[in-house]
Length: 114
Image (cartoon, rainbow, N blue to C red; front, side, top):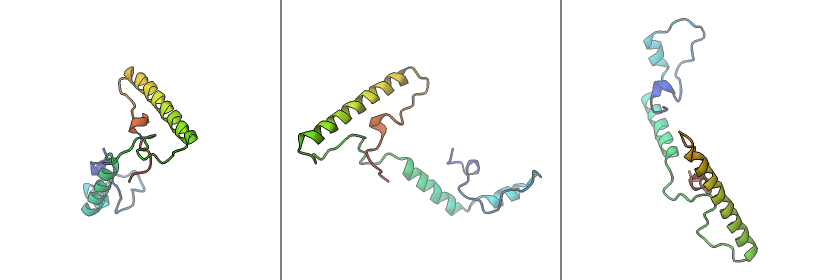
C-alpha cells in the first residue's frame, strides 16, 4: 500500500488544504512529492522490508563465545524457552484464519541488521 504514491505520499510540496473547499486535480498533483523523492522513499522501504541475507534468529549464537557452564546453561534455557514460545505461537496460528507470525522467535532478528 505504500508503493502507490497517492495513497501514502512520503512528503508534500504544498501545505494541506485549510478548508473543506473542493480542490482541483492540479492542486492535488502540485502537492505530491517530486519523482526523485518518491523513488528514494520506495527504495528505502524496499531495503527495510527485505529479510537480511545474513539473518540470525533470536537465540541463535553460531560463535561459541562462552566456555563456562553457567552461561552455556543460560543460553540453552533461553533457547528452550524460545522453542516453547514458537510451538505455542504455531499452535495458536493453526486455528487462525490469518496467522500472526511476526513475533515467532525464528522470524525475529537476533539483533538490529539494517
